[in-house]
Image (cartoon, rainbow, N blue to C red; front, top):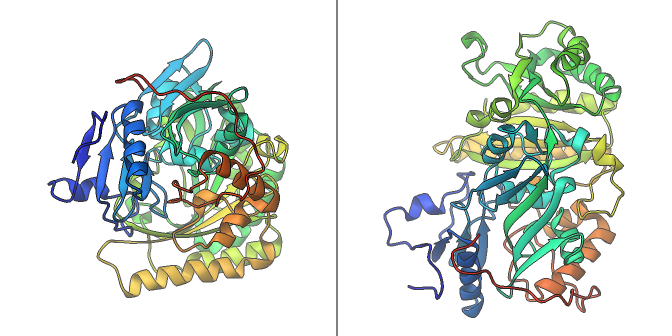
Length: 476
């Protein structure tokens, strides 16, 4: 099989590495595409999309392949695979970075930290830049510098027509608005351009662990502590077990615990002062807060959520951590049967909340916290184990019902979350606006293998009249 103008690699079921090429981060996803078009350039992406449209093939776009719902791969269609397009080019003077659509956040952190710069990225180094960005982009720097989408300056997108367009505040502004939170609904993004900020390379960062029995007390203290914290402090609470990392004493491995992971985006000594009350609370099992290279901290959890394990998520925004909400979380979080399952609570607010509602398609700026409940089991633990972990996540989400607020983060939606939850992620007004942009750029819904926004009929947003362009061969 050939694709006109395509110079990358085509992989079908007859190839020895087909199974490896179709595998994604979530090992519970097992789909068999007809063709994987592994792209090397933007021209390859254009050729692959045009080929798929000409033959009415199902299209999945793969960047990092990290989405829990497995949207990066489809059955009996074509995977437009950007995973080998991982270049990061930093302009330290302008404080910007151009990042290809297959890059991982570890690539970005390594490239930007070489110049003492960073932008808000995910909390796991092998998360894909494209998926995280297009959904909004939560990370440790978001309270200081905003979400990833708040730092996006421009994007180059291959649309459903197979055209290459540049979206920014001045070019295709309707598309640029939609890309900042609207997910992969609008095309295959081949290049992102981000604003960067001075940071590090050493920051005060790391987790502090307490015993699971102390969960309610830790959460109540944490709630009050972060309510007065400066924007420079980013925190994520992790409830589950102590991961078996080399820096953790072996006798604590897999012990039920609650942890507060911190990163202070400011001077190290200032971070140590701000975090002193947290470190002194109660009786920690282990305190790993220390001056740490930012890039190393960002990759510190990579081995705790490896490729190939089976994952199932449920999530919601939280209006706050009231005593009643704390009681629910403390009661439910440690009921998981698998020692690998965990719950993460992201502290929002700060710069995230100061961006005007409606300025971007990300609509969860009113949430005080985001919680994601992650059922995890090993590939051989199907059957009772998978059913038990799945049931736990669903019960936990249901128990949080009275405390939900601020919608749901679209990147945390799993494969069985229905269209109503997609609407919940955006709210009615933002969803209608997204549907209008979708109708302008993808009226046939070719890019629907995602948390789909269906095109409005008729479109109420008028597509920009700027002429799209095709890339010269061999460029990115």
